[in-house]
Length: 158
Image (cartoon, rainbow, N blue to C red; front, side, top):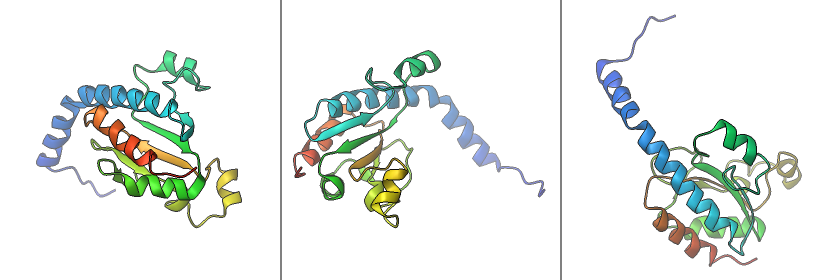
């Protein structure tokens, strides 16, 4: 044990952040639901993994346990690894990142990023399809996020 404590400024910043946590989480959840609904109806998307969608296998239990369905989701694009790369390289608002969770929209393609050292078989065994994309939906205007994704999805070949 070091006996260390956080600095007064760090404590102040933490308290300041906690004061707006509820409002930020509401916006994350609202935006994520809009993005999930958009993706769910897009022809280039095979499946959307988001508990807020009624088709999600965990929807009923999530509805009982949560006030909102969170800001993080995954979806699978048709066309595999190349389609995932093309999508991410075509985005302008969404930021490419290896870790998720921020006030800005962050996105990643595990097959070409975090899990690229693994073989396709190893990734599939772990539930990571070639076209899987993970997204942490931020606080930006939801329509701007959707427009960015729409433009990126239009550029993939599947």
